[in-house]
Image (tube, one colour):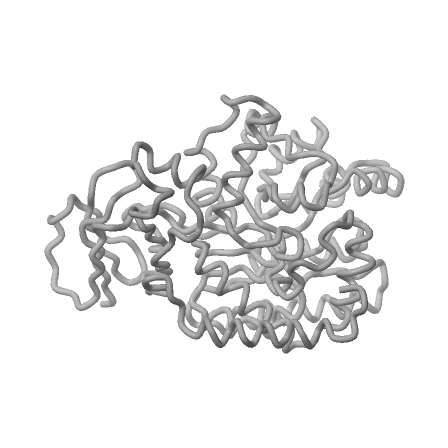
Length: 426
């Protein structure tokens, strides 16, 4: 039986514990010195704080290769003039290099589970699995209202599902990922819903990211994107709606009644100037589940969930006041809520849960003094405090080092250079 013992670890709420992990799950959590078992795998935790691994519920991982491209353009120009032309040139070697770099960045910054939507995802399944991170992978389904393209995207989506089914570790699972109401036909959206139902997959989709998206949907369908997706039967408890910035009161009620999970991406929304912020207070008052995401590294420009937690708290306070949200609630959004929304039983240091956790250097200046560890984690510390990443009981990063990281960085730099060669405006 695979075992890992973490001794004398500092808990977020104070005190020290011994944590025993067996077969990928927490099996014992006792006062320090109480777990007495012989195992070769022991981590001395006196100089660390343990916390659940972070869950990034919305990203486009391979866009790490596009980091820093078109930084100062608004969304429409950014997409049309910079991102889409480069994406059209992407080959599988670019996608793989970008995905591997993204996995490295997420591991080093404390993410243990991510929810991805991009292209050529089926080819990335073995790569992501080798990195040791937990992931939900979905082929970005864009049919542009073209029947031939819809047929192609159906096949590619099914390839991802089949590739994940052949992954023996159980860490990689598929999603069905229609891009949005404005890029996918009603036929395509209906097929996505049927496929998700057949395979028990989550649905990952952008909803109401910009005001223009909402206005165009009202023009084309007579309703907001949320109302339209509800009317055609797409929404349900398995849906992760990314962004959800421009919501009406009716939209929020629909989200609640259909148990849609929202992925809040505050940094990307601010960087792309989408015109508003997530209506945090109304959503929380209705009891809608809110999780956190980074979006892609082209629009963030990092995959750092510590930054996302801090901005989430500060944006809500700026709009709704100091009492609108606390550090503990934000941390829960970034951990347990994200795991639950993706159907994974992790995000919590608790007996029986998946053993996905990170260890922080408690002697890092940003975690001193330890008046309130949770406050420090959300408002003060950075991802540079992460020393260990443990996923399913396996040590994926030790003392800040990930296997092959130098090689991964060199490959990504080479792939980005190849992709951008000849791009006059980059």
